[in-house]
Length: 262
Image 1: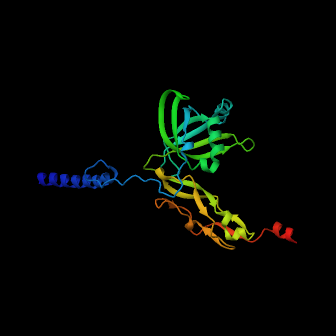
Image 2: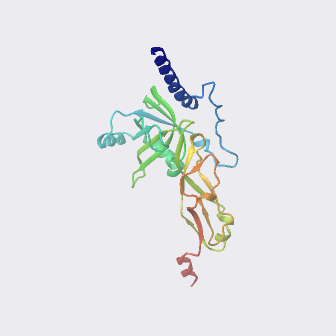
C-alpha cells in the first residue's frame, strides 16, 4: 500500500512539473523543444524610419530622492529631474530609477525634433555616476514617455522614459505628417483642411516604432475625409483607437474667406 501511494505521489508530481515545463518552453527560446524564434522586425521600404542625424545618446546621472525642493535644485544647476522605468503593459511599469538629465541636451532635441516627434523616437540612455564620465550604472534603449515643458520658456521641467528592449510592445502616440496639399483637389478649389487628429496611438514593437505617419491628401475632394483605418503603417503595428475615427476632412470655405468675397 505504501508503495502504491508513493508511486501515485510521484505521478502527480511529474504531471505538475510537466504542466509548468510546457509554459516555460514558450518563454525560453534557448530550449531545444521551443519553437524557432521569429525573425527580428525591421522597417519596411517606403515607410518612415528614424533620421540617423538625431541618433543621440542621452546622458544621465542617478538621483537619490524626489520632491519639489530636490527638483527645483536640480533645475537650478541645469538638470531635468527624470525617471526611467520598465514596460509592463506597454504604458505603465515598475523597476523605476530616479535620474537627472541635462537641460541643454533635452531642450536641443525637443527644439530640433518637435515635442510630439521627440516622444515617438527611441534613444540610448547612459546613466553614469557623473555626466559623461564616472562608473557606468546602466545603458539602455528608451522611449520618452512624458515631457513637461515650462509654459512660458518651454524649458523642460520633467521627462519620463520607458525602457524599450527589442521584445517590448509599447503604446506610442505617433505624429501625423500631412502631404499632398499642393495637389489636393479640394484645397485647389479653395476649400480648407480640417485637421482632427495630429497623433494616433498604436501598439508598436520597439524595433519598428515609426517616427511619424504620412497622411496622403492628394486625392481628397470637398466633403471627403480620411479615417484612422486609412493610415498606411507597418503591418506589425496595432491601432489602439477605433479605425473609424476621422483624421481629417476637406471642408467648405471658412466664414472669413466667404466674407472677403462679398
